[in-house]
Amino acid sequence: MSRIGIIGTGRIGSMLVKGLVNNGALQPEEIIVQNRSREKMQSLAREVPGIKQMQTPKEVWQEAEIIFLCVKPQDIKDVFAETGKTVPADKLLVSTMLAPPLSRLEELIEGPAARVYPSIVQETGNGAALFAFGQEVSMEKRDELLNLFHQLGSTYEVPENLFRVCGDITSCGPAFMAYMIGSLARVAEKRGLDGDKARSMALETMLGTATWMQQNRLTFGDLVDRVATPGGCTGEGVKVMEKFLDDGIEQVFDTTAQKEKDINDILGDI
Image (cartoon, rainbow, N blue to C red; front, side, top):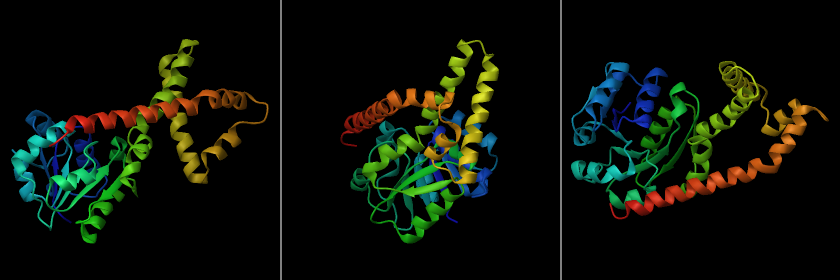
């Protein structure tokens, strides 16, 4: 197993460290981390004893064989100023950033690069990650990266032009789903139910729903049909959702696509 380097220990970088260690993919000693804020990096090291802390991105670049860039897109220029833009053929640079796209990243660097769009929930060993591989990535490094993420859930290699759409399901999706399920609890609380009980009921129902669907290999339509008996309350409620929910999700997808475009426009020439 290659030594893994993570530049940036924010939400995604920290998730990768904890997820890979807690789910048995790596030992802490196989992970190198660096973060601009030493306090944040040291906090992660206390949670995962044994990971190696580095002072600069350049040290990670030199010591790790697979290097994850988990910084904000606007910080990539500062990272490259320290590390340079050459990735040796036996290494792999992996961007987890919203931008730039892989095609642009390959123009910026010399060497093998890939793009991964993970989900914060993968710390649990469940969830989905999106992958796109550059032309210089060897099959060995490709398989090694995919095998790492198999310990964190499902992996999907998709065209980059679908990253945004897929990411709205896999990466943004947990927040969108939590908000939608949470709305059941919020409305119930407005109507007199104790708030803690409402939230607990919503969480348990969300967990049970996903588990039941997986165990019985149900589609979303199958589950609706099984719960919504003809002429019953559920069926009437679904009819209300059919009137507005898909249109609302269309607006969500349009909004996230525009935000990603805005970020790419701001980056300009890196």
